[in-house]
Image (cartoon, rainbow, N blue to C red; front, side, top):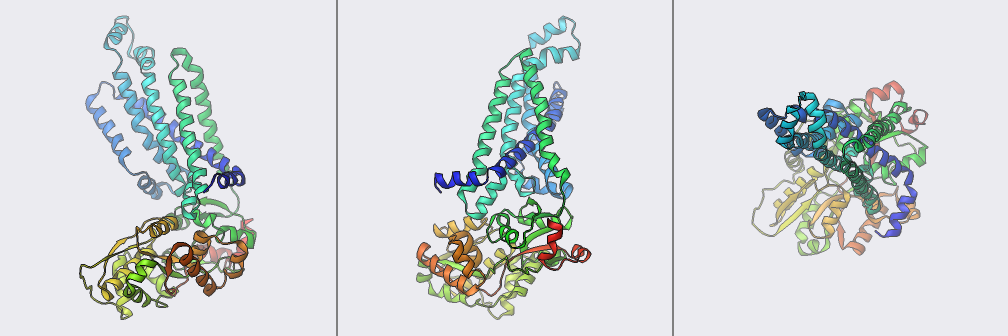
Length: 519
């Protein structure tokens, strides 16, 4: 990435960036306001109650140790997708520093000052508001500053559950191998954390009545930014779509649908695993997905026919480093046994068994090879080790197990598997840098995301699977010293999906049927 590309991206997406910044501020301010309203009184209440203070601070500390993405995931069944689970998770993360600093600040007030105030006849309320809180305010504000910085960082993950914010650019950039997009989200998030921290520092350094006016400004800003963030959702019309960052940003994803069909949706960006739950719960009307995904059957979804052929084919191929293929030709021969053996229906059924029937990828892979007469006992010779990686979704986990069992059964090589590495960029970089030896990829993804050829070339070959394969094979060899093995046989193309019940109610069979509702 160079500076010119970065500023060009900002120029092309400044409106979207401004929207994401406001969303990010809204998420941070709402959660912080709630945390202050709960944590400060709680910190005051536990002062002088040693046992209760230990329990309260311990509980808040436990919440702080829960991985943020896990906490967001836990909130989804309770609060659905979007703003509510994100704000509640951020609220929980902000509790500890504010409660702890409120408690510590008040407990740290000089005992002689407290005794003098009592000697003057002050009531408990007067002592608290006229002596303890004013003296403890700098420490309390230090806790609020800490909570603010934490929330700005954690709020980037909110994009995974459709709550918006600067995480949309970050996760989209990772998925699309676009460094400019990653930085367009990361740099504003870092600057926002610094700016808010410094603004609170200025307020923290004021004393007594000097704090009153700035605090009044904050009390106005909190609801204002909250209102700016929440209100747009109250006026949403038309179909609501849940898309992954990759599908939303890739030329062969939603932009292709938009161009070919003229469709516009009220779109939320979601983690791929959450889209299906969102459409099942009717939080969204339509989602993107892959045509071989087992959750299509599990969630009773209908794939809408791409009647204008906007979405290209994606045939799965093993990609291996050339030096590994040359050194171990028996490895290549073993994997070639899969050529044409896995069609769309077989792959869909295997995905369904793992996603819905909760069978392990290893068991499903074992059964597939056994049915095809390809399963052999593991030779277990303790020889050289081949490392197989994968992306972070079910189909890839199954393919890794199939590859592993074939290599163990037909060669003297040992296998180490590292499934769930992440998105396309992470897997490809790991392969190119020699951290893994092979992984399953898709021809359309290799063409559009990893090679990024001129649009004119893409238009000429994108609907011709054999030409796409030939071009990708040639370019991978010349540019990256990588080898493409023959396609496995199934086409895991993008697709738009709706609930079967919704399709029947609205007479949706093809993408064109959505046009009237999506405008």
